[in-house]
Image 1 (cartoon, rainbow, N blue to C red):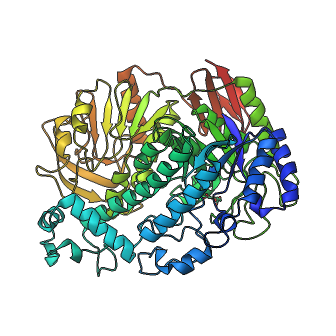
Image 2 (cartoon, rainbow, N blue to C red):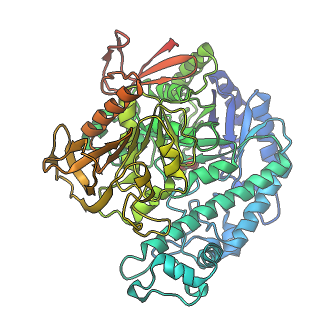
Image 3 (tube, protein in one colour):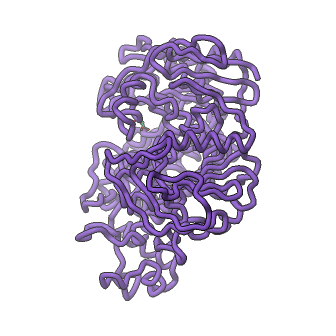
Length: 633
Ligand code: GAL
């Protein structure tokens, strides 16, 4: 795994670039990502390009032996462009245009902006496509960041109508699919259909689902246009996009198909603070991040672009954007770096080289302070670089467990949660965590992935079952766990004929006759676990494997397949992992809290995410906080 950093030569006097480059190389870095926000410097006036500074920046970095990852600057269209085409900005759900003065203010559907984005991409790719120092290209930056996938602009509305016409052919088919007879929502032509916002009460969930699919397709096609241009000028040079954490607004598997390397931006402390974690977890992992946050995304993104992946932005110290921004424990930056290697990353790049003394991110740490002295993380980068040099290249193994994940499931459940604490991403994360706590390696895969060869398969929830999926599950010989709400909707957001779990009845013969959601704080004890958040009534000839206090089926079992009819709490997940592992003959570890293990083809990594030293039974030794242990396999 190579190490790198994110660098903004345009922020610093040119006299400093050479020294920066030398210091990067001396620290053990070999990659530098640049350019992704530099449009106003690359093209200060419409049609007038200023390549000189970028040529020299690339030469300077290359002169120090560094390779460059070059980003297209389309996340930051300059003021002159917005002034020329004021309607290129996205419109938010409340109908307000998104203003100039930060970033990502464009609408993915605006044809004029697309032409401009293609033009600047082509200009950059023409200039640097054959440059020997460019090791990788990055398209745009963090599609969707700051809530920018959905736009409700006239351009988006018009593109949506075209998308619907292509999907349904005629408007009667749309009316039928969506059930528009309900509340007299029928349309006489596609021209009458708009985006599903500003309605009096909730819009039709089928309308929302198609709007989300459409918006996701717009992101994918925007990306595809850039990829095609870059490929034409830089054949053979890998292309990446830097995805985000805990982000489901577009289908990353779709975008992943068009790129060569899926990278993501890892900010474990910010994510712990901003997401659903309990106050106890936020306290326990304040300066380390929850032990599964980084690993979850590593295992997810490894499955997005055919196996090649990396970390494009690694948190090096306190960030600026969470509600609270603690500093990592000494050692964590090195630990996070090695955790990426343990999951098979090909690069980890720190965000950013030097903390900016100006503008929005001046409170965000870098590897250097604004005065160019080394920040705390710098030494840890050297440590990580030394360990990586010592152990040599690490390659991911095929994991024991597959966890089936879809973006569409997140949309379906988000559109119609039915209980506000039913969060799809949290459910998937809890399943992941239950597997990882017992020392299992996990591949997070799309439903279309080849599931053969896994020792167990977990489907946390799959409301819309893709064609052929049930048959592929039926053909598996390993234990399978299917979670609540699976098979509960058709592709057009209707309850399936014959009720849930729809097509999955082929693998588990039962019918969900009623569902209920439970408010936060309600916890109904059962034998060894608790019913919280969600419960389904199940009709079946199968005798329940596990039941609640009122003898209603909680887990149904047939021929290696389990259906779980409640939101599974941690105790239930732990029990199910144990049963599946026993059936599959897979050995489990008893890991103390905060300890995680991950295998590559050559090594076993053990990481301590706890804030204190922990005795590790399987090693027979004490692991200090924020440290790791490495064994050859
Ligand atoms: C990312 C983004 C970077 C920077 C960073 C700060 O979301 O890609 O440009 O803003 O966050 O943590």
